[in-house]
Image (spheres, rainbow, N blue to C red):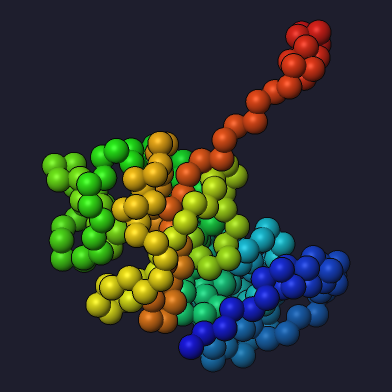
Length: 233
């Protein structure tokens, strides 16, 4: 089994500890390099992050012969160029997307921004979870949505990109693919009248969650706000 830390508490603790972390980062006297087997003194202290906030969670100390991503459990994201924790549980926060190594935060931002990933609900005629069915997420000829092809772009309790709204999800057994919780995805999709984006939004030890996401409706400017903008112009 797995146990995810209290994300809110972890983020709050990181924010409170930020001043002391920055002081430690500036210290000239540093511990030994953290790369396994290295006994050289560190010359650099680099901040490491996770996918749950933009506040650093700690420091990685390395010598002149090693890089922070050489430390086990870390990786460098080609998108945000930060050092990140690879995982806290069974779920990995590192993916390969468009030939780049990305964290799930950067992956989610790119994926949801890609218009090609959004599906017209009227095009969906059936939903299956079958890795052997084919390479399509949705087969344009048959209208079969194969959720086994959903990309892993969100982690458990990962904050959503701006403008994205969670709609609903269903969980499936990782081994035989049968649905173990949630409503029928086909029924949920049939109720939609706007494009949606299906993604793998949680990977557990023995199950996965397929989530359906839509765009947040844009707020209308009030008449007063419109008048103020006109007067300012």
